[in-house]
Length: 424
View 1 (spheres, rainbow, N blue to C red):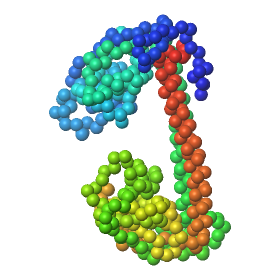
View 2 (view 1 turned 90 degrees about the vertical axis):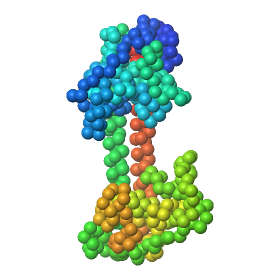
View 3 (view 1 turned 90 degrees about the horizontal axis):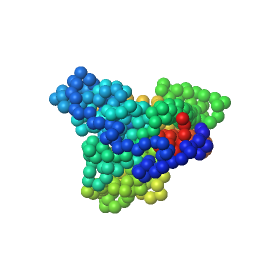
View 4 (view 1 turned 120 degrees about the vertical axis):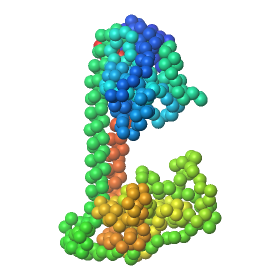
């Protein structure tokens, strides 16, 4: 990608009057928003689908979820008009509240619909208004104010380049952002492939070992298939014991399961963690225990505790410790993420509604697992750890490159729409 500092600039600049815009080319104009746009008053059109704005784009919504009586109060926004979501401005999770509509829909009466009053390049102003949204409009909702009206934004200063330059800037940004988005998509695909390859390596290691030339035999279990000839098969009741120790004081630290970080101390990840009235009778977890969410076994929610001290988990969790045949429960944590085991968890779980499907210990303990010699298990775990670090570094590199591309894209758009670079 071309460095922004290497792109030509205009010869002379002037201050725009707004800090978020800063300097603009000397021949560009500064106009109030109300001189460029007018608010389109509420127009009813029950024939159109319902819509909303999502990440700066106007999209359709599921009409079936909106009562006709509610839809009757909705206003029309047509292709080529701008839609603004002025609600809950101090809610940071909503991103890009302004967008140029490419479809005809009706939206909540709380939205603001804008039509241009003069000839403009709509695509240029779509880029500019995205910048205005992030850098200025959202600040209008600070404090107790969460919602604004057209009157709150009417006197906002915007910039007006000559129309030929508006078109040139929009075309330049359309081309460049498309290239950046394509590069990001390629890297996201590479990340997916790296993660997939990592899982294949892990699952092959825990089910077939590290030696591709070792003689194989039938495990005796159809869904397990072939295993190394010197391995055995044991049901989990011979491998694990359930730990059902309960806290008598509730004073031990509370643990939680994170899909990203594993089993962690809840207070380390939640500044304002929800605290139960009492943690007495919560289950105790020790280092090297396997913590199992009985409600989410089919989602792979089970982790070995690597925490040096004991802590507590909800009674809805199951806690297991090694009984025999397994050198490290990390081996089972990895094995249980194999698709064959996930399928077994689903088959054996009780319940019909997702979220209420529970895998009880008796059903878990009936599941057979392949058992390698303990020294070989440790070799497999060491190999997996080494391979995982290699793949994780590669994923991290791609993620950092994606972040840099996103930052470059934002800077490029901001620089082009405010005239910090000359693209025409």
